[in-house]
Image (cartoon, rainbow, N blue to C red):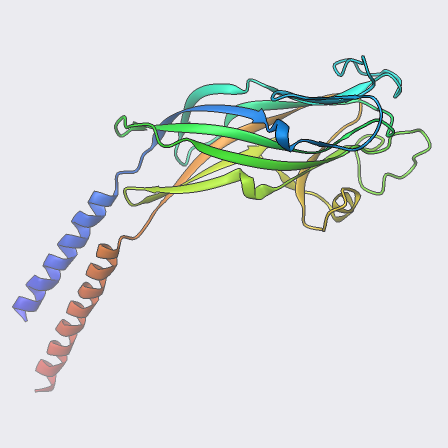
Amino acid sequence: MFRTQKYLLAILGSLFFVGQAQASLITNWSFSSNTTWDTADTVFTDGGGTTINESDLISWGATGGDHTVSGLSSFDSRSAIGIGGSSVVGTVETNGAPATETAVLTHYNNAIRLSFSILESATLVTDLILTPLLPEVGDPLAPLSRRIATSFIETPNTSEIEDCGFETETRCDDIFVVDATGLSSSFEINGWMYHVNFALGAGTIGPLTDLQCAAAGVDSGCVGFTTPENAQTDIGLALTITARPVPEPSIVALFGLGLLAMGLVRVRRNKKFAA
C-alpha cells in the first residue's frame, strides 16, 4: 500500500508542476491597429448625386454638398460615415475592463433624397498587431486582420411619414446591421486560449428588434445599431482580450493515472478489511 501511496503522491506532484508550467498567462499587451474601409467592397444603390468611396470616408448625396452641415434641404445635403483616429497604438490588459478604443466612426445622418445613390453596404477592416508586455516582453504576433461587414438602411424622413414601422428616437432613425462573426478571433499561446474581441457602439453591438430587422430587410435576430436623424453620431471601435487555460494532454493523462492510483488504494483497503 505504501508503494501505491508514493506513486499517487508522485502523480499529484507532477500535476502541480505541469499546472505551474502552464500558468504563463500574458497579462498585458501593447498593440498597434489600423482601421479602414475596404473600398473594393463598398456598394451604393443606383441613383443621382455623387458618391465618395475612400479608405477613411464614405459619403453620398447632393453633388457639391457638405456632409458636415446639417439642416439643409434634402436636395442639397449629403450623409457620410467616416473613420477618425484610424491608426492607434496603446496597451490592453488581458481580462481587463473597460474596452480599449482603437478607432472612432462618425455617422453624419442628414436627410437626403431617396432618389440619390445611397450607401447599401460596406466592410470595415481592422489590422491589429499584438506584442506581449507582461510577464515579459515578447516578439510581436503575426498581424491579425478582422473584416466587419455592415449593411445600411437610409430610412425615409419626409413629413408625410407618420409611422416608421419600428420604434425610433427621431422621425426614422437610420439602421446599421452588423455581421458579428467578424468581431472576434482566437489563438493559443503556452496553454492559454486568447480571445480578441471588437465591439462597436457604446461598448457593444446590440440586438435589433424584429421590426428594425424587418425594416432593414433581414431576418429577426439581427444585431447592429441605429443613429438619429440630423445628428452626428460617434461609434467607437473598441478592443478587449480575454483568456482561459487549455487543458494539456499530459495533464489529462496524469489526472487519469491519479484517479487509477486512488482506485487501487481503495481496492487494497477494501481487501484488507474484508480479510
